[in-house]
Image (cartoon, rainbow, N blue to C red; front, top):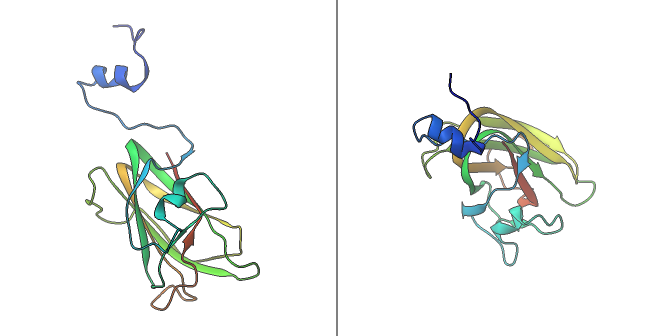
Length: 166
């Protein structure tokens, strides 16, 4: 049996498996590499603020009932979930519904791999959505906030920080 010595990281495994690129798996939360697209943004509250690592900055969408943002993870990853920092005016309870989509090729979203219905939390909460594990480079996060998670105006349209569990 051959030795695996000299192989380093995924490049060695890729060579071992005929040049097929294997997804990275680091068992930790990462910040996406970039924002690809988004539903809207308001003034200086740009979408890239959701991944800038600054807890005080935020992406703020326009006043509409449904919001979404699409990220490039910067490479193939086995996605297991997401984490989103939520804040609002102190004392206001937030009701939120959300879906998570993962794709290897941008735009090939298929069915959602994670969903939360009528999640509620207060200012400063972390929303965690565990997903069905799926390999992908792109992630689409959709959310809408109403008391019953159906049609209506959004009470929470701010996204402060966003991470992906890979």
